[in-house]
Length: 184
Image (cartoon, rainbow, N blue to C red; front, side):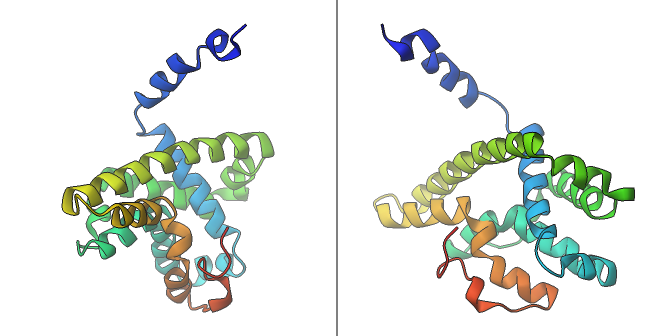
């Protein structure tokens, strides 16, 4: 018997490809990204002293791939922040994760079963981001496979790649945590 035929994986993959990323998958991406920032040492202190720096760091974690690919393609790096709905959603999640009374949102999202679901949903958005980066690079550089791969990689892994700049925003500089030196 054909196991893949019995599971109807082809239909499942087409169904997942037609799902809208907004708002559920994007929300999962923002929650996991902001939680990753919150778990960095010293971030809670920064969030109390300078909420604006904390918010900007969160936006770099959420939109780092689009910012980095914009820089690499000589496009405005603030263009990802022009989508007001996404920025408002990411900002709301940032506020809830950092400032919700008794850390209810963070505590709930940190539960292992929910965190696994959110991380899986974030990985689905990562594939869409890589595809978007490759498509964006292909529109400018039709014959350059290496550029398409680099932009897709930067778009998918941008939060980790731009983390050194994000550390500077928070007033911390740790070059030993560079994503190029220690890949996650």
